[in-house]
Image (cartoon, rainbow, N blue to C red):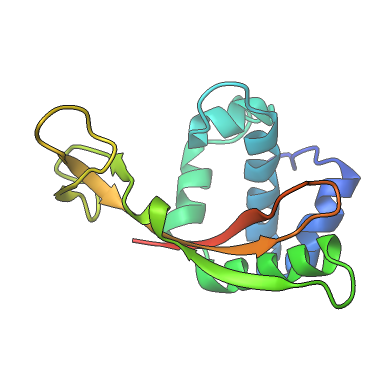
Length: 163
């Protein structure tokens, strides 16, 4: 049996409120989120396992299998996350706006290689030079625009993304 990750109780309590995973997937997800928060370098799958202190005890295949074969749905997770954010951060009767972050849609995530899913030659609004074209993937991000009590201006909290 592989060791479970050490997840701070406050973070684990928050992750359990999402309630969208089976027990094995929840342990893997908790480990990856812990590594995501603790990572100081690139937030790759291997980097997250290293930051969570699991690189020597878990195979990176376990984390990759979570994204490719585990039983969970990214849309259900996004909706659960949006409900959690609204319940945790907003007061009763506060204004809530759901917005499609169009500016993020135009940003190309540069990827190359024969096996990169959905990579294609696309417009790159951030490209330097005369040809604003690059190879990669483009995402549409949906966020919730909220006025947080500790911010002087509204903030957009991204909750879903789709190619």
